[in-house]
Length: 168
Image (cartoon, rainbow, N blue to C red):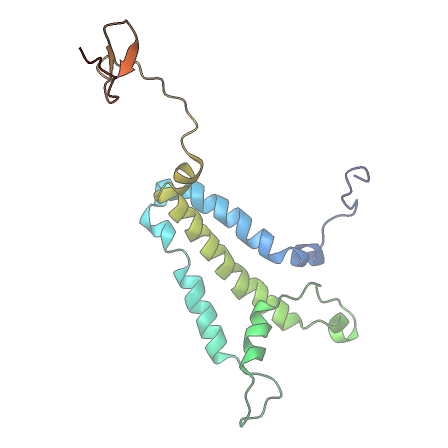
């Protein structure tokens, strides 16, 4: 492992939190793309339930130590969307990390990201967006003789082309 530049220790929860968005989005995007053939329309709506849960959590969130006269709405968004990059430890003060916040991010934000990615993968598959963007990789030779004609000189031309005609 040292030659590849990867750490040689076993992955921990903090390693997962370092790549929270990547580990939540990429697998769901691939699965949404692959499974949309079997689940059809249901796959494109996988984001709805996680979004409803997130909205409920955002609306019922009690901001700590905030005056009623001056609420700070950015604290609510930061609580859920600014990801804690380290796991709490079993020391006094949990190593400076709020374990409830980490749990909310794992239980609410990760499924929301995954639901969006799953639905995005399904939409990409159902609308053939990859084929539209990258084109069809198969080369299809034209073997039908109805599309091709041979002109007087023996040259093969496409029937949709207008061959030049000599003026006599």
